[in-house]
Image 1 (tube, rainbow, N blue to C red):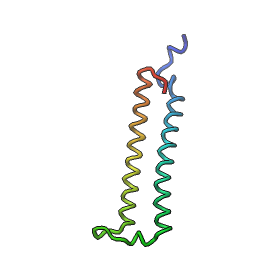
Image 2: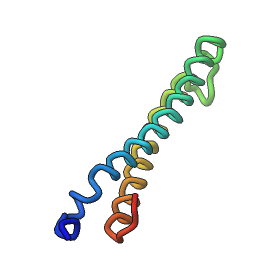
Image 3: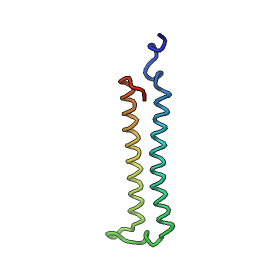
Image 4: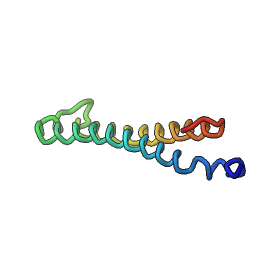
Amino acid sequence: MADKTMTLKQRYAEPLSRARARIGRRIFFAYLGLYGLFVVAHVGWPQLTRYRVGGVGLGLIACVVLMAATCVAALLFHLWCERLERRARQGEQP
């Protein structure tokens, strides 16, 4: 009986928190892998950074791609967490 008086936030705060953390870890490690490739490419083949594409250095293009990937990762995290919360509101277990 006491369980029915609990609010949605009280009932699902801990499971939602764990699910969000799991999503965050997955996105973080995927981005870490991408960043690792970026670092290995720049350390292993430094001549690549001096290569020009349309008058812009390849190193600068790679940095812009990494920044865009960061924004995409943040957007994905937000969208997936919103989906979790929506499911929790409908009564599903996160």
